[in-house]
Amino acid sequence: MEIGQGKDEKIGFFGRQWRWVKKKAVKMMNNVKKIGEDDPRRIIHSFKVGLALSLVSLFYYFRPLYNDFGVAAMWAVLTVVVVFEFSVGATLGKGLNRAFATLLAGTLAVGAHHLASLSGKKGEPIILGAFVFIFAAGATFARFFPRIKARYDYGVVIFILTFSLVAVSGYRVNELVALAHQRLSTIMIGSSVCVFISIFVCPVWAGEDLHRLLALNIELLAIFLEGFPKEYFQKMEIGENVVVSKEKSFLQGYKAVLNSKTSEETLANFARWEPGHGRFGFRHPWKQYLKIGSLTRQCAYYIEGLNTCINSEKQAPTELRQQIQAGCTKMSSECGKTLSELALAIQTMTKPISAANHLAVAKTATADLKTAMKTTVSNHTDVSEMLSAATIASLLITIIEHTEKIVESVDQLASMAKFKDTTVILEKSPSLHRAYVKPFMDIDGPHICITVCGPMSDSREISKHCGTVRDQHVEV
Image (cartoon, rainbow, N blue to C red; front, side):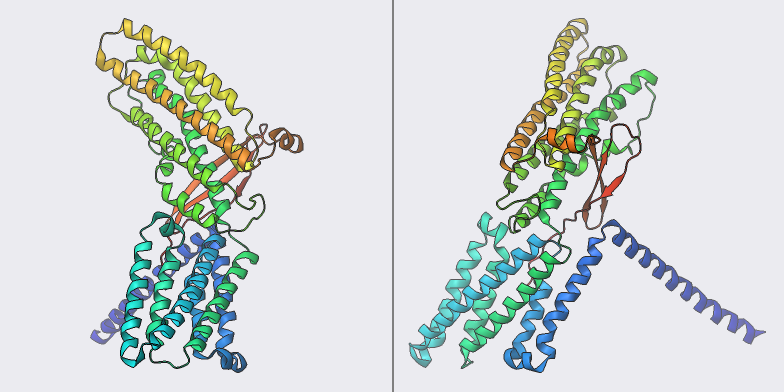
């Protein structure tokens, strides 16, 4: 009995361990599946990196290639690892930064070594040390300039590293020029392989991701504004004890806009490195995207105030809300339609034609609301009751003012980027009515799901086009 019990206990222990391992394996596989389904480009990117590493490894595996480059062939492998990024812009920016920084630093290091050798054996290390100090200190200080920090920070780091390595190692190496040539050649080869594969094998364009992200942010504001009147005034229609759900998408979606500055600036920086492709020509006005994004975030801050009013415990009385309901509803819905038309115009790269009309209607409703507020003030003496209604009216008026600025900026973008005339697009595709843009989040960053719907159809045919924004880390 005791032996049997010990065997059962032993089997039970290993059984529990096996169940734990199996549970962890299933969980990991589900995570892998989810990541791949959320953005299949991640899977493709992984294969692209593997392909690039396999190609540059040939310089080390094949004897004829190894004889030409020697141990320096490992620099090609290292270059692929640190240069190959998710988007074309990020890869091209890092590749060019690394290649030109290596070329410049290697040339200066060889020149410094030649000048130092003229001072004799005793003075050579002193001169080399002085050169290393001057160039390293100057390059490090240059990293504090915002423009250099944004676009050339990685190149400056590589410049410091390469100059220091070549200058220091050259003191003990006789064939310094050959060493610098081998290192530069392998780095050029590694960067070229990364850029070639990134552009010609299932490319991921940062500019397209920025374009979709901007349309997403504007549409999120439109969704909130179009749903705001119903959400705010339904308490009055159904009863004061109605609990408003905080999980509704239009109440939460706009919050992604508040934290989009870093993503937009990162994508815009990468997009500037990318060559002309598709609808995005050479010298596309990416700075205008940042301007529109800034105005969109300012508008989102005031929308957050509206959301606070929805969930506030202190609400205006029913009679007071009835007096401002028509004006607020008209202002909010028309402003939402304006932003929705702008989002569609950006997504389809067509000139907006009806956004100005919706904005004009919203301005007319603003004048009517101001008149109603004056009448309301004369009939109500309770300041606390007036405060909530006045806050709603003031926020909506400010949102309309910011929406007008967004309209002007989008018109400028349409002119600078040469957007197509909307009438031509509608003639070719009369069913095109509106684009619904929906976000979803995961650990790697925001993704975008854009749906184009026809006006006579209730069902939405979803076309996923996901864009990932990842933090870029400087590696050497």
